[in-house]
Length: 123
Image (cartoon, rainbow, N blue to C red; front, side, top):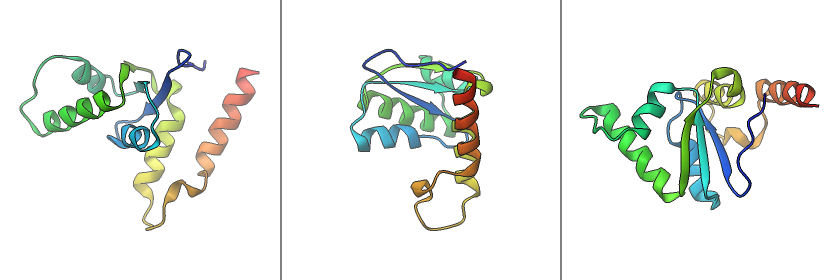
């Protein structure tokens, strides 16, 4: 089942394997306000929680919170991996890229297949 954002909001789906990338893209593109969906339940809990984490992950979470303020983030929510397949595929593909070129110039075949499959199930 596809989860569409509320009208007037952009939706960023992210995977824990690549942190910050979606927020940076939204800032660079002027996309705001946004909602963020992630399949990393613990990360979503840390972002939404008020606790200060005194560790390396705490610094990363703090950076993410600062970026979310810049893009006027309305919410950060958890979604199961089954609803976050494209983000997961892109993150996995990005981590495997060894080339210096900008890898988003072409749609990776794994993403193409997932989008086609989602289109078929949503008809």
